[in-house]
Length: 261
Image 1 (cartoon, helix red, strand yellow):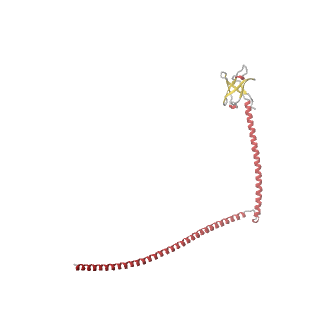
Image 2 (tube, one colour):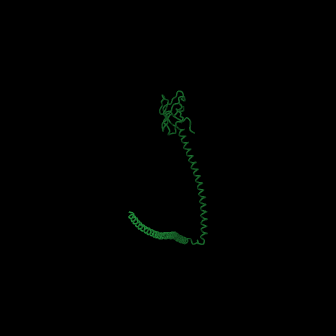
Image 3 (cartoon, one colour):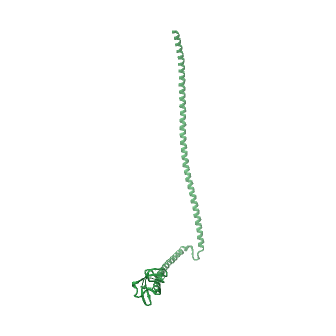
């Protein structure tokens, strides 16, 4: 039994030694592979770092080129604007030259039409004389204008005075017409104490007008106007003004109590 156990132990030890050898060999191979992998990764990482550096440098180069391109573009724009400005100046100069040439031709044509005694050399002197003459004529025109304005003021004053005179004449005529009133009593109502007269506003009678009733050379009494229209007037008989024994009758004459001055 002891021998069997010894044999089994030897076998187990042999198997363990074999597996230990195999495991040690696999470990060594694995460590070698890992080291190789580390070296490969380090080598690849170095390549990647170099690639990153190359890319960064390329970006810097691209940025520099872009900056130079932008600067060149700005210079190109500035040149374009300058060229456009030069072109505009050139066109304007050409237009001014054409205008001056045209003006010169016009002046030459006008000089050709000048009288024989007017010379270009004396043109400035002749123009000064013309200006002086124009100034004198202008001053004379202004003086004449003031005279005309003064006369117009006088005429306006005369027109106003004439209108005032005409108005006064009209007022006097109306007053004369009223003072020459020839109205008649056409109806009498003794019960109510009023009369109707055949005249009204048409000859200037108003509610404030004071009237007298006359018969021949005698005064019958006074009237107080109630209403008046175009050609009729209704008035109360003031009984306390009646001459004793007399009353208004149709046909009696009606005159103003107070004449209009």
